[in-house]
Image (cartoon, rainbow, N blue to C red):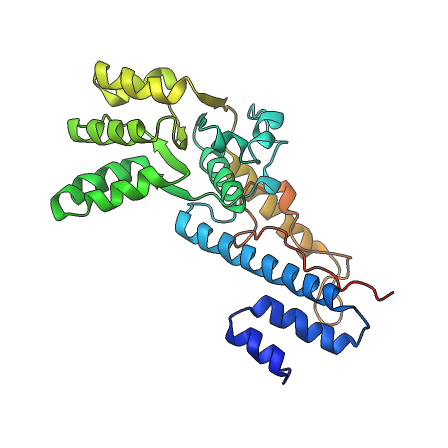
Length: 296
C-alpha cells in the first residue's frame, strides 16, 4: 500500500476512489499537470460512489430476480414482447412522467423477470425501487395494523419512485385488503410509478378486487395511464433447462486435454440462449474507470 501523506489523508476522508487514483498516478510517474490529476481523481471518486449508491438501492429494492437487467432480456422468445417499447422503458422518462406498466400473461413467460429488469434499470438511474409480491404484501399490511408497524410500512411503500407489485391474483381480496390497496394506489396516483404483473388479463381484475366500487376506483388509476404488455407463449423455464442440458452434454462429448480440461476455445454456457436470469449476481452498471490522461 502506498505510504504517502496525501493518500492517507484521502483515505481518512473516505475518498477511497480518489486515493486509488492518486496511487495509480504516483506509480505511473507521468508528467500530468495538476488540473489533470484532480480531474482524474474526481472522476474515479464519482464512479466509485455511483457504484456504491446503485448497489445500496438494489439491496433495498429486494428484487426477486436480482440478476435481471435490460441487457439480458430475451427478445427471441416467441411471447409477443414489444421490443421497441420495452427497451424505451430502460430510460427513467416514464418514471418521471408517473406512468405505470402492466405485464400480463401465462405462467413462465418471464413477467416477474421483466419487472425486475425494469427495477434494475430504475436503480441505475438513481430512482428508489421496492419489490413486493402482492398477496404477501396485503397479508403483511393486515398484520402490521395489529402490531403498530402499519404507518412505517405504508410510508415506505408509497414513497418509492417505482413500486413493483408481482403476482396480482388469483385469490379474491378481503375487505381489508381492498382498502389497503386502494390507499396505496390513491397515494401513488400521479405521484409515483407502479409495475404490476399478473397471470390474469386486466379484464379479470375486477373479479379479484371483488367489489365494483373499489374495482372501478383502483383500476381507473392504474390502467388508463399504463403501458400494457400482453405476453403469451410457452414457458421459458423449460427452454432454459433444455439449453443447460444441451450445453452439459456438449461439454461431455468434447475431447479432453491431459489436464482433463476441454480443448475447445471457450466453454462457458451461452447465457444469451438460456432462459432469462441465467447470469449469476446482480449486474453493476458499467462505470469504467477513467483512463489516465496521456502526458503531452
